[in-house]
Amino acid sequence: MQAGPLNAITDVSGLAVGHAQDERLKSGVTVLLCDPPATASVCVLGGAPGTRETDLLAPDATVQAVDALVLSGGSAFGLDAASGVQAALRAQGRGFAVGPVRVPIVPAAILFDLLNGGDKDWGRYPPYRALGFEAAMASGTAVALGSVGAGTGALTATLKGGLGTASTLLPNGVTIGALVAVNALGSATVGDGPHFWAAPFEEQDEFGGLGLPFPLPDEARLIRTKLDPVPQGNTTIGIIATDAALTKAEARRLAMAAHDGFARALWPAHTPLDGDLIFAVSTGQAPAPAEPATMVALCAAAGATMARAIARGVHAARPAPHDVKPCWSDLAGRPAR
Image (cartoon, rainbow, N blue to C red; front, side, top):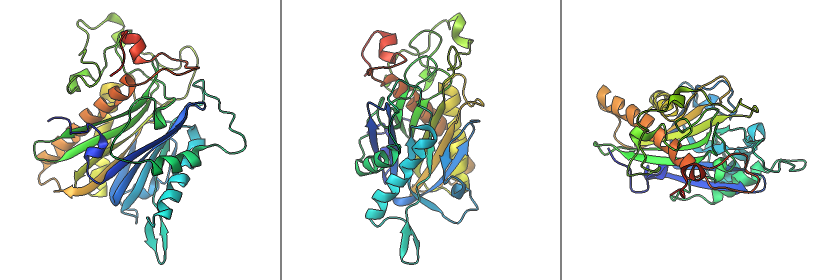
């Protein structure tokens, strides 16, 4: 297996990504657009999720495909971002047809970034609907990483988080990609050092090429979270996508497998105070898994690709005024690539 040419979720054909952010607010929105609409499902393993329209992603629900998926900062206020994306898609004539009316299908998930040093005095209405519209209109195949979009103000237990992406080309020609906003309760790095928990899955030094520390430091197993010293909100939200043709039930299984990437890249993960959620998308432009072993390989790649995306998001974070956590580049004593 190897990374795709863009090493981004947009290596899966039919997908585009857009970001919008407000630097003063220290928050933003990331949108994944599917053209044509794609089969999708979701798996939530965190205890504190915030979502919109995830019920329709159940295998027995009527709507079979989505037009877009939204990852947003702003906690529950950020759910407004999906309305802005809907407005952009409606203007393009996109959406689920109900007689002469089209309703864009735009599930969304949010992370908590209200205590990150940004100015949240936005007046009567939060800015996320406008940011959602802007992100949808700015979509393309190039995907910026780090302190952009939904990752603008993201934090982990020890460092700034960020927006990450990665892709994997399987030997059978299938592509799988991940997109994630890392705002975890736990840490993406080992102990006090710059080494990433996701190191065994790294491709071509994409997040520093440091490997794992040897021997592992004594503090590696210490649980470091945002609860110490001051409680803060947390969530890692992501999307796993493939061009393999999957049913909604198979897409949910892929989302479940991609959660292994959270566990490989973050310590701890899936806590009662995380909102850990992964959407899964199938564009159906490659053959369906023909046998169980093919689906097993796809699920394994999902976990590895998500782990890489998480590390890349933290690795690419950039310093900004009023930050409350350092960046990985500060910790490593070198500029992030």
